[in-house]
Length: 134
Image 1 (cartoon, rainbow, N blue to C red):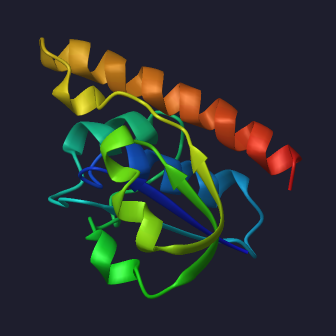
Image 2 (image 1 turned 120 degrees about the horizontal axis):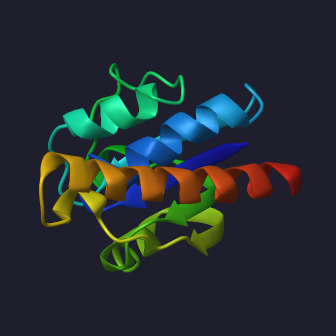
Image 3 (image 1 turned 120 degrees about the vertical axis):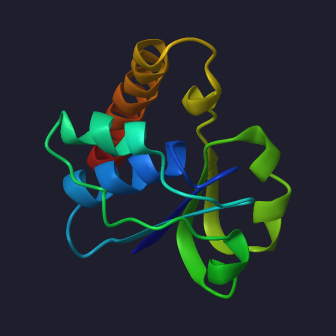
């Protein structure tokens, strides 16, 4: 089974989802992530994932085009702006799991980390539920 998580920047939401899926799903499931405009994996995202024992420090941000030749069982879209771009990806199912971009949260570093944790915890619940339905 192959799963692709897609958001806008492949720096926070999709990296969190990839890390969680690799941790909670069977090791036989191939998990990838990509973004429309990739940059760098956000340092605070790495920090917030370490809080729950998942190390994503080796993850690298990838452009959607880098994985577009693949066929997936599931394309899970984490940002509404990515819906149209993912239509060219071959997939058996597309699931919209939209989350606001926590890295764009206004405020202090602590406030942004709270927003990242909120998305992390929500995605963790979704992935745990998803794994039970496989």
